[in-house]
Structure formats: structure tokens, C-alpha cells
Length: 449
Image (tube, rainbow, N blue to C red; front, side, top):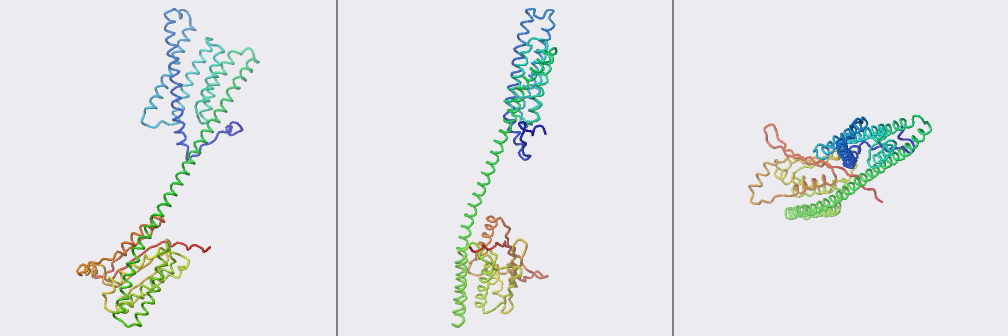
């Protein structure tokens, strides 16, 4: 808890950012660690060269302190090991851990501090070694960005030999000892606090950058999503525009057929229904969504017109789940009509009069609404064979366009609309008709303002 009190408050890295932040610190600290280690190697090499010259000058003859000092310089040269390790870290393809880098730094500092300590005790540098320790602590605190645990370890590693020096030199004068301890703490504590603030500032900068990056990605995602929705809506509008003329052409053919085959009264009734249907189609085609009630009305009108056209050759049953609030929910328009048209044109039309059955059922499901369109017609396989044998090779594209629209609806609204077509057969594999299942999401109708 000590590091959370007053000026020693040390910010904690969020767990989800810890590894990435440590990698950032690793990049910053590794090159500095190399500098510290190689500077130790340089000065140790320089001192060893001087000691070689001193040896030939006879400086070590009967001088144990000089020999000990030379040995200490050789010890300082052991910084070559952390220096070489830092080079390996820099070139190794494997990732270096943050802890390994900090241990390397502490190892370099330990060798330098212990060498300075020995030099001071054998009185080659005396009290000036305290100044060297002070400079070393300042450099380590203010240059390296370390977390609290390693920062404390670094300062303790420097403070212990400084304390030993003070006790050694001032062992006979308590007042001087207290003064020197106060001086050491006077530069050690401020440098430690500054280093903590430095760490906190770097962490804040890192978290601000991550937040900005996250916001940028979110904004980019929203913009791309909106753009894709706009593109998808344009494509769906184009598909509806392509399907409506196809649908209207079939309706006009039905009117023509009724006018030619029936009396004026029947034709007038047919035209009245057609006018209502056209009004619904025009209203629906302008909207991205229509209420389920409007879509059902359009389907009822279309089926009535087809019954007129084929002189009620088939029977129709509409079944609507009472749990569906058809006035307050919406679906994309003109999705079901092509499948009902296929059931009539390619399945029921060729059945003997009175034997055709068309069932249209709406069921509420967890993910929206399930439309069941089932006929007892001649089946898709037989109908396709008849089409191939006819001179006309006309093929309806209504269902193909609808499947493309459903794919775009799924991509735009991230839903799971789908169509499943089943061929119904008896135990002798004879066709009994076709069943189409259309699963669509339900969208809540916007409230009028």
C-alpha cells in the first residue's frame, strides 16, 4: 500500500493493456540498458589498460591495495556479460520479456555499484564515491521507465552501498553520519518521485493513445457500416424496381385473360382488385419496410386475382398466428409474392379443376416470423421438364431476385433471414407438391411523431 500514498502514488496498468504497455517500455528501455552495460565495459577496459601500464611501472610491487584495486577493475569488466546479453536481446527473433530486460538492468547496476563500493573502501576515491553513487541513481531513475517493483529494487540496490559507505567513513561521528544520510535521501527520494511521475505520465499517454485508437476504429467501423447499409439499400431498391414490372406484367396478363374469357362484370371486379393491388404495390415499393398487415393485404389481393384468372381452379387457405401483431411490425416488401406465384403458375395451374390446394401460413418464432407456402401441385421436377419441352424458354427471375434481396438483408441488418424449399413426395417417390419456408426478422414499426 506504500506506493499508493501521497506523492508515491503509482498508477496501475489495466490488465487488458499490461502486456502491450510493457512491450512499449521494453522498446524504450532496451537501448538504454545497452548503453549502461557497454559504458561499464568501456570504463573497465580503460582501467584494465591503465593497470597493465602500472604493472610494468612497478606500481603493484608490495602494494596489496593496488592489486585489490586492479582486481576490482577486472570485476567491473564483468559488465560485458549483460552487455552481450542486451545485444542478443536486440537481435533475437524471439520476443524478450519485460522482466528479463529489467533483470539485465539490475545486473549491470549491481556490478557497477559493487565495484564503486570496493573502490571507496580501499580509499582510492574515498567520499567522492558517494557523489558517483548519487549521479548513478539520478541517471537510473530519470532515464529508465520502470514499474514500481523494479524501481524500488533499483533504488535499494544503490542506497545500500551508499549507506555502508556513510557508516564506514562516519563511524566515529554520529552527527556527520546523520547529515550524510539526510543528503543522500535528499537527492534519492526526489529522483525516485520524479521517476514515478515520469512512469505515470508515460502510462497516461499510452492509455490516451489506445483510447484514441479505439475511438478511431469505432468511428471507422460505424462509417463503413453506414456506407454498406446505404449501398445495400440502393441495391435492394434496384431489385424491387426490377421485380415490380415483372409482377405487374403478370397481373396485366391475368386481366387480359379474364377480359378475353369472361364477361364484363367479372372483368370489372378483376380491375377493381387490380387497382387496389397497384396502389399497395406503389406505396410499398417506396418504402424499405412495410407493415405485416399491408404485406398480407397485398398477398390476399394477388391470390384473389389469380383465382379469378384460373376460374377458381384451386382453393386457398390463409392461417395467421394470433400472437403476431401484424399492424405494429414490419418486414421487407415483396418477399413472398414470387414463391406464391411459382406455386400457382408451375404447380397448381396444371392440376384438374377443384383439386388444387394452396396453404399460406404465418407463424411467430423467436427470431421473427416463419412463412409457410405449400401447394399440392405437380412438383418442381415435373414442372421444369414441361418448361424445357415448351417452345417458349421464358424463365421467371422473381425468386432469384428475392434470394439476392434476402442475402443483402442479412448483410445489411446482420440477421438470419433464409428460404428453404422442400419437394413433397409420397412413399412411392411420386410428387405431392412443394413447400417453401421463408424465415424473416420482424422490425418494430417506428412510432409516429
